[in-house]
Length: 475
Image 1 (cartoon, rainbow, N blue to C red):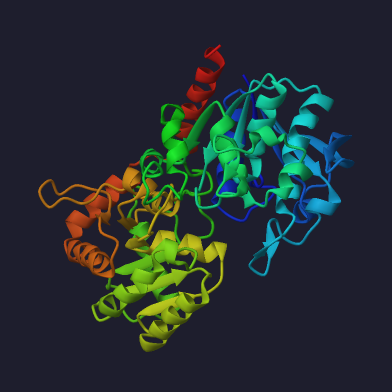
Image 2 (cartoon, rainbow, N blue to C red; image 1 turned 90 degrees about the vertical axis):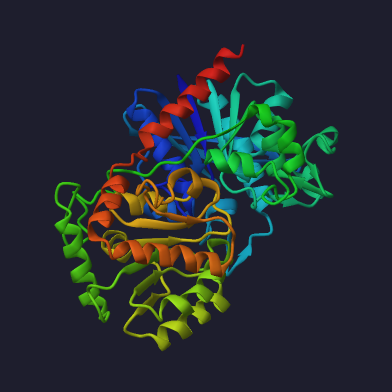
């Protein structure tokens, strides 16, 4: 099978968030399974600094607002069976950031990614590539499914929603600038509350739609999580599926991780204890024997930092240590900073991103905090389980699909969860975890359960392959 993965970012070429991890992992794993995979992604300024050698550099042109806009398709076989096609266009992509600067989106983003969508289809033609299925990701690629339908191109399309909140809704004028027929500007087409919606184009015109967890696929059909698109999604619910993301088990592996103090595995859990001892010493936390709660996250309300900042006022009165790594919303950063100043020997806050520190938090913590208000999939809880760190999560999206809430009756589970989104419920979940921490044998049992979970990308890739095959057999 020949698969085209289309994404506005993909590891190792570019990254701002989880979308890049997913696209890059699928590219790598599917090609390793013997499928022929083409990855289409922009050739950004940052990408140019890292990747300069290509087997082909093929020029092409697409029409934008009545003019020929030139680009170059940079082609390289990056993996065996895995060919990267990096779309170069200096006016649109040779910028310091991917989507915007200083918290403000580039105003020409609809032109940039409208060009990209057209460029992918033109590149397929110019390079004479045979592709069976185009796997599109998030709003930046949504127009491709419309173009495929409009031109009756011979591709099946799967459109993956990674986060429904980011929809790519733009002024009507961009419809003309991108030379899209006005017949598509309707309630059944790309029109969305007076705007042109790239996301809606992907939902309406793709052959199948997926999201990044089974629970999120159900949630987005509701008013609470549907971001005003629940109606159109309900109309396509028979073509909607949730496939859980995975994590790269080569990168996230406590047996081989060079960024942690001591390598360990299920047969050598003393190594995890040694990581905690060294980490607590390095950070200057007061007690090695106190439970350690870690967090690696954007500092944002969506990630639950609003309720966590309240909950920590109670938790820090207990015999517990907390470490948080991340950056984000300034008011929340300031609240956390005030608490870390109040409890300097119990709460360490790092308002930055540090890859090595992130690995140490996953390996050294007893519990991992993910009280997200909503979470389409989430990767942090899977990484934490890989390192024997029990997640404490809000029961939504992918968190619900991956964390089995500890039961006093069965004395089983791989973490702790709470249903109602409130600081009181979060505090209660944390206190349940802290009480279990006192029972060393039970903690060890739960750690073993957690480390035995399998969230590798191979499992997820097999499910995507099934969808691709379904699409091809639909003829």
